[in-house]
Amino acid sequence: MTAKSHTLTAALRSTVRAHPERIAFYFRDRTWTYGELEDRVARCARGLHRLGLRPGDACGLVLRNCPEFVVLFFALCRLGAVAVPVNFLEKGEKLGYIFADAGVKACLTSKEFLKQVHEAQKKAPHLRHVFVREPAGHHPTFESLLAGEGGSFEEPALGGDALAMLIYTAGTTGNPKGVMLTHGNFLANVESCHRAIEVGPEDRFLCLLPMFHSFSWTVNVLLPIRLGATIVILETLLPFEPVLKTIWDRKITVF
Image (cartoon, rainbow, N blue to C red; front, top):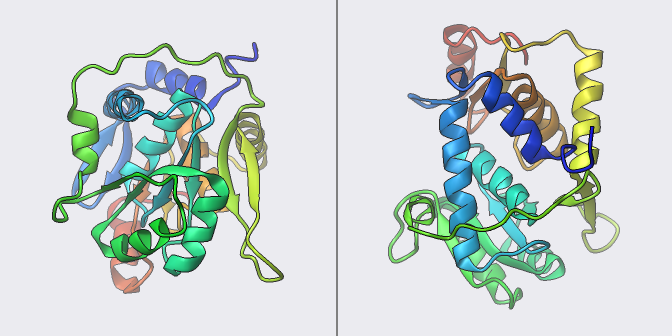
């Protein structure tokens, strides 16, 4: 395996080539195929490039579990940029510290968490672009990021040591610290999971734990995508009755 192929971008493209029509996500009442995921990742990467994001730049994610979280992450990987997912329950002040420390230049959030993100902007001078999943006043939406024309770019030649994500510690004994996770880190973790549990393309994973957490991101998102399996995305644990119904209706095999 060459250095350039040992990236999350190469892993996604390999799955798309093998399973373009297989269902990647169930989310609410929608389904997304791997082909559709690839199309949206490509358009999102072009939109981020038009916005001015370049290799090494950081982008925040303050969201509940949703397909847009996954699309943005893989679009950032394609640019050589860095995802900074944050617990959506964090207060604006702590969020601002994290965004300032990471040098976050853009952020995707939802209407539910806009207030915290706006508070964070006061402490994060580099944060100039805020997008929302759904219409929210004058704010640009995630779909508008995908809809623009042009923005083609030459993808950087990345290796497995390229930074993919900064996940911040809880900061219980001081300020939160950004843990650097590379493409190679994630792919090695995914391979370890694959060896440890018997899963394959026919499995259906329930993504209920929050995507901003490294365990959920690795086991419930990256592992099934590497396999070409299906992810059933849920936004919240409560109330629990719809969770049980989803497990039954979507025939979940991995929880």
